[in-house]
Length: 291
Image 1 (spheres, helix red, strand yellow):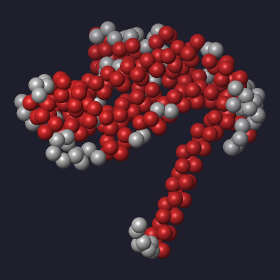
Image 2 (cartoon, rainbow, N blue to C red):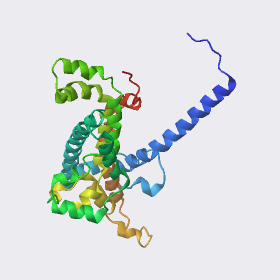
Image 3 (cartoon, one colour):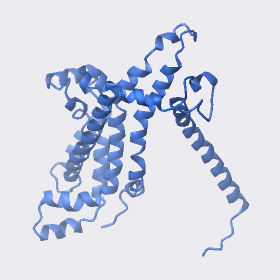
Image 4 (tube, one colour):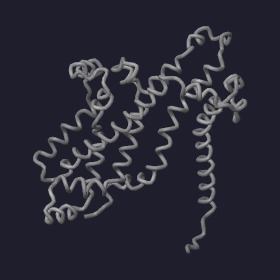
């Protein structure tokens, strides 16, 4: 075991570092705890009494009312379907695009990489995008929430760089055994790329789960609206009372319902982090594998 004596400066730095991290953690946790306290409060909302660490009473009645609402259940189903299907297709298509770009023998490799990089810096704008999606007849379909953002240039380059870092001997031995590029990609390369694929999948899943503007813009059918749009509508519920700045028409139930909706839209995506956290360290070490 190491017996190196730590200097007083190093110990002071560690203590100050720990204090700063604890304060930062509390600043991140408290808003979430505050909204949770409002969501389980009885009758009078905690918002009426300022900042509190504990709820005013405890009840799950407002959660029960929320889940009896068709809009919440429909939005939750659509958000889950969008997140799962969108994440799976995005990771699959992005990986298939990154694999050939990682090969030195790809004809005009630099040219195709440059073409792919252009959308990172230039976009067509909202109106041309809307007209394109309308001409493709994607309005009021589930595909309009998945196809336009199916491939991210940043994720594509990230996965490509990870594949470049893999030793070429893996593919050479597989080709000697008679494997083609498709078999090599799905049976050898993708299993090795689990860390970066898991990281990209988490980014894409969070993006799909939190997305609301595209659904608000392209979806008019109530049965296709996602949960974040429902949250947007709930948060604007009763907002007209803020015009006068008075609390005469204040309804505590509205604030509690809003808090419940925020919790319902936040908790599912938070629960995915512990399952994918272990892959982050491996994905950061892009290029660390030597051939």
